[in-house]
Amino acid sequence: MHSFTFTLDSSMEILNPSDIQSQYGLKTLEKLSRTESKGSSLVIGFPKEVSADENRVCITPGGASVLVANGHQVLIETGAGADAHFPDQEYAEAGAQVCNTAQEVFKKAEIISKVAPPTQTERELLQPGQILISAIHLGNVTIDLFKELIARNVTGIGFEFIQSADGSYPIVRMMHEITGSMAVQIAARHLETNQNGPGLIIGGISGVPPATVTILGSGIIAEYAARTALGYGAQIFVLDTDLSSLRRLENALDRRIITAVANQQYLNAAVKSADVIIGAALTEGHRAPCWVTETMVASMRAGSVIVDTVIDQGGCVSTSRPTTHSSPVFTEHGVIHYCVPNMPSNVARTATFALNNVLVPYLMSIGDAGGLEPALWQNPDLRNGTYIYRRTLTKKSLSTQFDVPYREIDMLLASRM
Image (cartoon, rainbow, N blue to C red):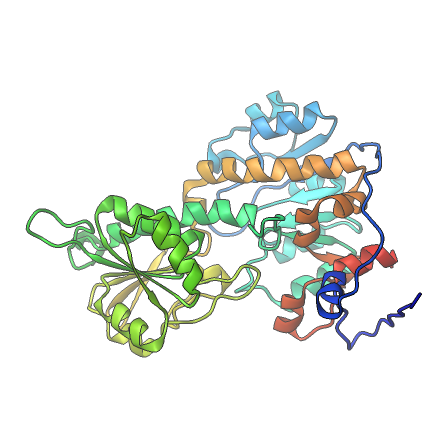
């Protein structure tokens, strides 16, 4: 029998076992076996969000009651659910412990679950060995976040990386469904005269043609934007570089949209003729590709609207820059730009229910498995979602983005490093 020795070196890339199998035809003889594990009681903390205009929280009172009923302790900072219209009293009645300060939540909890990436102040509150479950915002994140989490021996699990066996991203999908629906609603409002728009109704009326909506990308955001725009009665163009994805979307919407491959010719034409551009081009776990140049933006009609829904991942329009809910738009080349990174925060109650529905089962699975390490073995979604483990970066995309070494989490788990 042949044996293979792998030497770990910080400058080399370690192949994932699945890559070894696919590239070299090697297959391990071991089989995963289910072992009986004793569940553990977790202390899970939900601090109040301090990032600008972030109104969501990761847990509803109903979700808290489920966790408490299963033997877990839930800590929630006072006022954490207020902007989503979940008062402290409802959490207390559900069995959660309402804490007066964020410091108390961070000090006592084993797991911190929050919506936005941790601010510098919040990073300083993280305790050694804690688990952080939150968004990362790949378009704005810096290497400092990862350095600090590694220095504090914090395990990082990112919303953008949690991926199911079918290839879907459950948390990202829920937020993208909301974002896509909101994008058209927002664009329709900014086409109105009192918003300095051209004074168009997006769906038109009898004898007056509808507005033209150009959607960049054909993923979940694009699909829900297209569905909403169809409801308004708009004329819709969808562009993407993935022909099979365009075909899927076209079939899903009964061919009521016009699709085109996102090459230079079609992009130029579609952007120039658009009343609304919905920027939704995105590959999960990576920065968004920039498809629309400043020259293209300058060719658009005055008063046209761009809603760059992937600005939190860097944006797909070159003139986009992050804005806030309190100051959501700016005008460049006569074109209105709406580039709020956390769009679902403006429908905080709906978004909180969506987050709760996905996160609570994951938190339960950590407890049922008896802790994080057995949960990572048993739950591929959480394993895929982990970007820092045992003081090590575990994502190739982040390694490429920041030019730092990484190790596949499968190798870290197997080696027990």
